[in-house]
Amino acid sequence: MAESDKPLLIKRYASRRLYNTETSDYVTLEDIAEFIRDGREVQIIDLKSGDDLTRQYLLQIIAEHESRGENVLPINVLTDLVRSYSNQATSMVPDFLAASFEMLRDSQSQVMDSMTKANPLSGMPGMEAMRAQQEAFLKAMTGGLSGMGKVPTPGAAPAESSNEDLSDIKKQLSELQDKLSKLGK
Image (cartoon, rainbow, N blue to C red; front, side):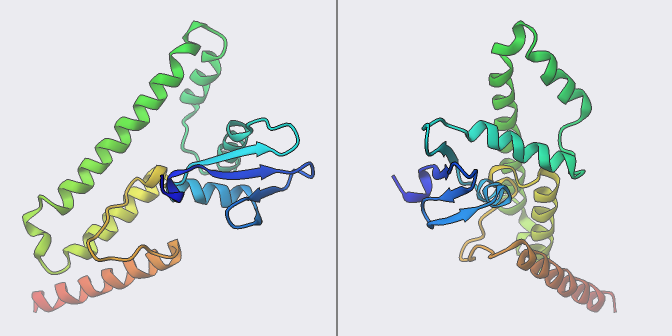
């Protein structure tokens, strides 16, 4: 099993600090959220008791994003989740949610594949810039859920940060606009 296939082990010390066992440094909740957005599984363990705290910290990450106005979960979904804890539907809700998110990931992957592979216009100048914009848009709309919106481009190195992605998209958009201006003349 490759190193990145194993869950990243995070240990919580008595001081409540979170320790990344791979890089031997302390991490924040935002760091953990970034690992997850990059497609990495994490496991958070209490060092003293050995209890698995992953669920608790993932819920805390979601709550923080929601409280900052990054609303992904509509009120009616949150209400239904609260209701599901108090009735017999509790047993089927986790399976339903997991299946729903899996369908969302699969359908987005199919859309991205159809935009790149099956598109006869993909060789046209400027299409790569448009594909990058669409990818960035889908990533922004989905909050980067488990690598959603990422379509590997053959021979392309992964981007170092979202700022570089944004700069690259702006550059490609500018190039596309220049090409369109020249075609219009």
